[in-house]
Length: 84
Image (cartoon, rainbow, N blue to C red; front, top):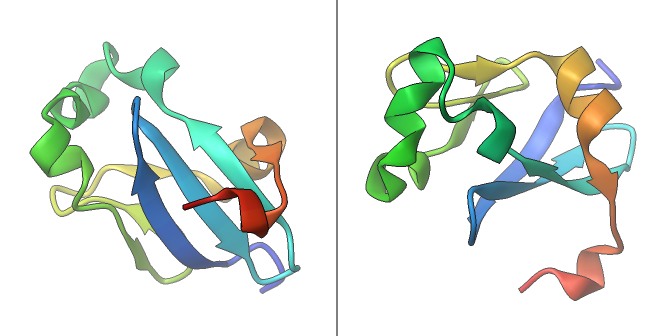
């Protein structure tokens, strides 16, 4: 689908860089979620860095995920050239 994530990279300070199938590129800040429920585990930076993609969604090994509509609504669009 057009909202599927095709690339995700962990960034410093609990952010992720994402590229969406619809060609949008952006940074999503997870800090507001780190003290909530299943997302608390993401406070461990080594675990946070295990971010991946499953069925087009941003996920972590213990089944944490970011809903596509949340990702699209809250990510800050960027030019991919500014991401290391």
